[in-house]
Amino acid sequence: MFPFERTWVHARDVEQVALAIEDMVTQSSGPYFAALWGLALAARHAAADAPDQVTERVRAAADRLIATRPTNDHQRLAAAFVLDAVDAARARGEDSPAELAAAALAGARAGDADYRGRSRAMGEAAARLLPDGARVLTHCWGDLYLTETVAAAQRAGKELTFYCTETRPYLQGARLTAETLAEMGIPTTLITDGMGASLFSRGEVDALITASDRVTLDGHVVNKVGTLQLAVAAHAFGVPYHALCHEPDPKSPTAADVPIEHRDGDEVLHTLGRRTASERVRGHYPAFDVTPPRFVTTVVTDQGPFAPGALAGYEHPTHDQGEQE
Image 1 (cartoon, rainbow, N blue to C red):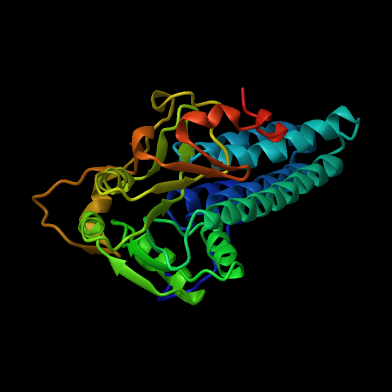
Image 2 (image 1 turned 90 degrees about the vertical axis):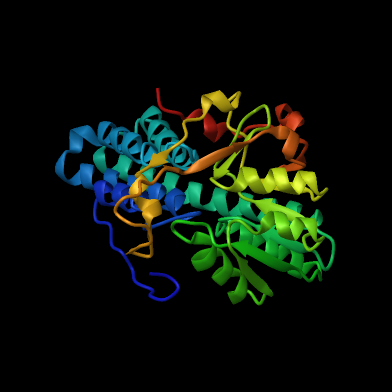
C-alpha cells in the first residue's frame, strides 16, 4: 500500500477497471483517467469480439464506470469525451469497428489532455490566491490540481507550507497527499482529522484549500466527508476556504440533486487492514459531505475564481453535453 508499497494493478477489462475504482485501488485523479482508458479498452474489446455492438458496448461500459462512485462526477465527464468522439465518428460515416475503436481512443486522449490543461489553469488561479509564506490546511487531496497549485506557487517564487489531515478511514491524506507534497519539497505536517479547528483558533493556518468531488450551481461544495467541519471552523475563525473544481455540475442545481455515496460501515472499523474497534461496535460511513456556500470563500475553476453565488457565470465547455440519457 502506497507509500509503503508501490505496485502496478493491471485491469484487463472494464469490469476490472470498475472494481479498481470501487475498491479504492485508484483515488483522486485516478478514477477519471481509469474511466477514459477503460472506455477505450471497451471499444477495442468490442471491435474484436462483437464488431456490430461497439457503440452499445461502450455506452454500457460508460454506465458501469459512472456508477462506481456516484457522488464524484469525474467519471461522467470522462465518459462524455469518449462517447462524443464515437458519436462524431458515426456522424462522419466512420462506423466500422476499427474506426469506432480509434475514435474512442482519440476521445480518451482528448479527455486526458483536457484534464491536464484545466488542472494547470486551476492551479495557477489557486496559487494567485495564496500569499507568499502561506500556511495551508488541506483535506484528502492528492489530485493533479494539488500538484499544479504547488507548482504554480513555486514558479511564482512563493514558499508554502501545508498541514494535511490524515483522512480516515483510508488515510488518503497521510498516504497520498502528504507524500505527494513532501516529494515536491514542500514542508508538510500531518494532523489527525479532528485537529483543524485547534489550528485555526491559534492562527496557525492562513487558508483552507480542498478539491471537490462536485460543486452545485448554487455553490454547495461536495467533498470527502470531514470537509464540512473544517469549512465551518475556518469560517468561525476568519480563515478563507477555497474549493477547487473543474467545473460546477450543470446537472446539479442544488445539493439535493447530488447522490451521496454511503460505503460499507465496516470500513471505518479498520485502518490499513487492521481492526481498530471491537466486534460489538458498528460503523457508519457516508463518504462525502456537503458544505453550504456561506462557508465557502471561493470556488476555483479552470476559468478562474468565482464567489460561490456567482457560478452561473461559468461557461461550460461543449464536451459536458455528451451525457447519458
